[in-house]
Length: 296
Image (tube, rainbow, N blue to C red; front, side, top):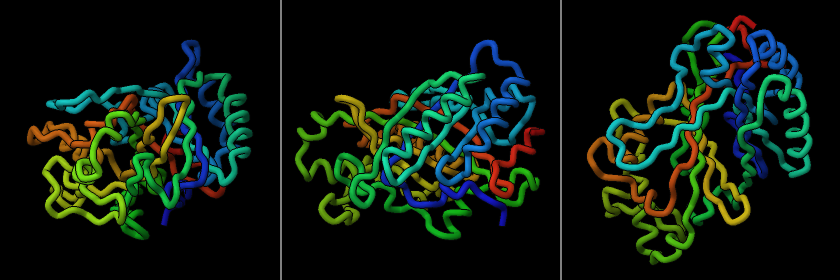
């Protein structure tokens, strides 16, 4: 089996930072390569998962089949912002202070060629719940099924073990959510908050029905590693979906957005995405990232 950035397959941590970086206007290919080489010493694939955006891959003169920029879904009946970036880092830690040092070191090294676009402070709620109180990622594939859904296999050797990741930062409107009855909330999600039991008679707009991975052709399985986030008065869910391609994520988003059948996922009643981007997560070679697919 190819060597994978192990943080992708591990359970979500207690604390995390999601970072995105853009290229500085004067960054050339050599500066980008040298900066990437310098940051590799920090990236172990477990405590820090790193992914490259399409703009960076193009600057490096490379091509990763399947990597592209996120664009809105044609026919979508809701807003799906596109906020591309050159680099994405998922800093994972059991203790908050570990993230302080990870962020400090990453910013120092990357500042030569990259600008920090966004820092999202995330955390685990209970056993893995959204701030709305509902369990998140109930239908996540596990074990070999997770690998088959999230990891590139049977491709050229320097691509095997890599993964594609789609991210969206969703912002919740808690005033709107709390104005709903518990019955309305449960039907919006399609599960009972109290025991996570799926509602067989939930409306077609229920989130569970819109995203049932086995109900797509082909099946649309993704590995979710989403976490709640908060900043001052704003909060929500930082959605993270790892896949062997972006196809499964796009199939789900097409149905959620109403582009497929005109039915919009009810979750849009209280939460909206404010970012959206695609990245490629390189595999590992030994204890370091394998960037040979990009000639590095």
